[in-house]
Image (cartoon, rainbow over all chains, first blue to last red; front, side, top):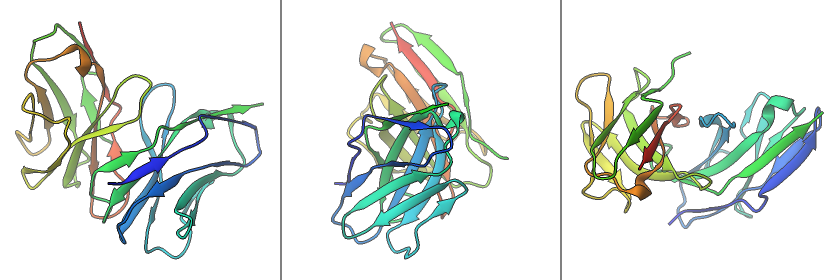
Length: 115
Length: 112
């Protein structure tokens, strides 16, 4: 079964600084997807970024980039130029095969951005 | 920008009652999902649905749960006889062939 580990229960960063949120995964599959979601205090789940296991380049979406290190089975999220509105819970997730399968989530990292 | 919608935003029910949670997925999406998140815990998969049938379900999705796509736009989750431990945030999600699963805002279910 897929497993996601997020070892940082909480992270703090100053506004305008970059921050890295750690995620490691465990899978025996050759094909899988990696995802990051943001959950603000209002509760909704916001899709941020996706990386396929066969993608050679790291995924980027605006200020978000996914640092994919396949050999280490890590998929860290990098947020550049943090903003106060980035304060939220961040979940890493993985799927088997394509992006269409069930997502397996980690326990999340609570990010706090301070001015 | 198209989005997944869910109703109601909050449902309070008595233990043993039936509840139906409703979702309208993004219109050109073909794959639909239900997840739940018990307060303070991680998000858990319940069921996925494609081409009018369940494609995968988790061990949580027992006989008390059912899903339906009654028309071309709605996707529902029914809990037949609610238990206290069913209290959670329930998320509907939808996706196309590539890219992420897009989540709705959730329905907070409280079972008393």
